[in-house]
Amino acid sequence: MNLIDQRIAAWGGPFCVVTFGSGLLLAGFVPPPSPSLDAMHIAAIYQAKAMLIQIGMILGLFGIAGYMSLVGAISVQLFRIKGISRLPPYMQLGAGAIGVLTVMFPVMIFAMAAFRPERDPNLTQLLNDAGWLIIIPAFPTFIAQFARLRRGRIARQKPHTGLPALVCLL
Image 1 (cartoon, rainbow, N blue to C red):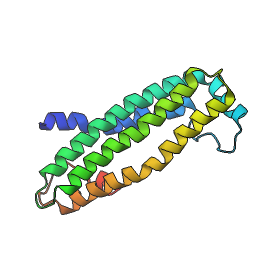
Image 2: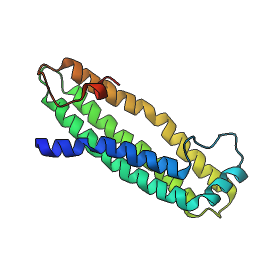
Image 3: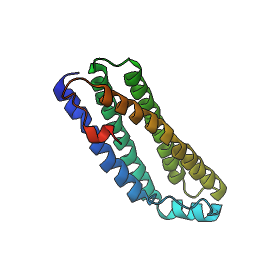
């Protein structure tokens, strides 16, 4: 991966934040629906905002693609650092890949719930709950990913590896 490819891939991070965040806002998922809402209320949300949720989740899927490219660029940079084991770059790449899937599946589930909003409210609530119960516990994979990234940043020996210090110290 040459430097130009890496820089383009690194722009996947801001692209993900803007696109995925816009999708969540458009869908009305910031803040998420209260878990105490009954099936009728959840179904009413999906019925009233079906098109907005669908468009928002499509934007979210595009944003996740940007995140994938960022994961690749960061992994390449970690492999370049001399003096560290191969574990941090592989853990970073693996955690990033798992992170993509654990966000992509709930986004698809939310889109599925909005695709046929007239279905039984209990099924809509089930899909909504499944999406949130998958996406919320995904955060440990991101913690593992950024911990490996920080380890690589601390261990680097060159004055500049291309990894922004602010990203690594999150």
